Length: 553
Image 1 (tube, helix red, strand yellow):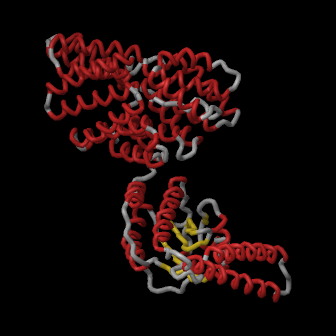
Image 2: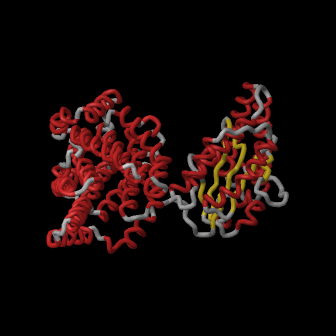
Image 3: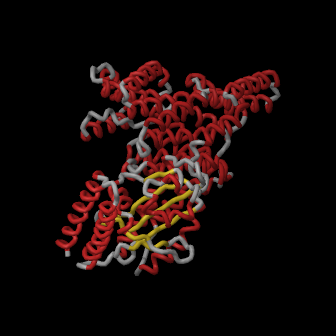
């Protein structure tokens, strides 16, 4: 469930207090949330609605608010409150998923990703939901990758124990299915620790249930039975009906005869109350098996028919199409996010420029493969003298000169995000970069400037085949790579007076380029007044940077 933000209009202290109440005392919070749903302020009313859905969802009653959710979603869309619309759509996705309406859940979660910012909590929750869908459709590998992306894109995860518990539970389920029960145990320990810190009893119960499944898979049936009983007791204590049904189903698998039949019947009753077709199908299947073992072939046949009917209603026959629909959310099939995460967490020891260049030469082929590139180039102003040397592994090429590309460097200095270009032929600064673009004809380009103290110290160029699009995920990865390289280059920067002086020398080379360009313009038959004004502005900005660097020295 979502631990809702309870409205962006609330103060941080008030919001944190509400979250604690909703998480730890849901029964006390629900009447207050229902009252807040009637507030005139639409933001607060929608936040209260999300909180009420959270409480009722754990009790198996969230469907009571489906109409209100849909109405609130329409209103948020009409008001262009897209961040709130994303949260509401994510909650609807959970309702659809629990009932087994997988196509509707996929649609709702994809809308969330369209409306939410990439690092928003609702986007993280939607990715977790899409990972669930992959698991439900049997594609465990893809689900694991989508879950990785949920973790990597949510920067606030270290400070959000509820989300850490949620991700750890899902990762444990994936590891148990793909690598075995022992691989899942560390994640379950993490989930239990995070759930305790968040005060979320549901996830403490669910971690215990998952431990029971691991014990069953390991062949320790006595421990599995004990843990399943503990999980059921915990789920009953907090009213977590979905987990009660699953724990009862597990207890029926661990026992035999009338006792097993009783547990399976209890699981079916809960599943029907939850209107969960996947759970109903599983319970009917277990009842059919048990009755066949006891020789009751008529009732067994009935339950097996019910199971088949319910499973067919889940559109299992459309698995290929549904998996293809989910493929667009698997934005990291080559493992780029995992590689960048590993590199950013690595301890780097670079004594000098030669160490950096060796590290780049080693990493570059890995990055080209993981990022799906045709070419990856880094131009580094190694000496702070306005000369950017290419580190692309090709035979020695002429360095780029700051003085010959003033407009391009200025654009990189001012850019808030990576510059995109469909091909070298269409490059806005082709005239300044002509020679460097000679070998890149027809390739789509993504370009970033690596800055230290406002000065561009390196250029990072990513290239793909012509016409290729750069997704939000591609741009995010390029920016993370640029940030990592900038951090490494900063570690090489000399301390004391040398660095400001080097920056000043680089700026002087740029100013010389501006002067040369002004001479060319004045020598022309037609004087372009706007270009002269632009160059004047760049000269003033460069002079200010030089003055600042000299003061620091």
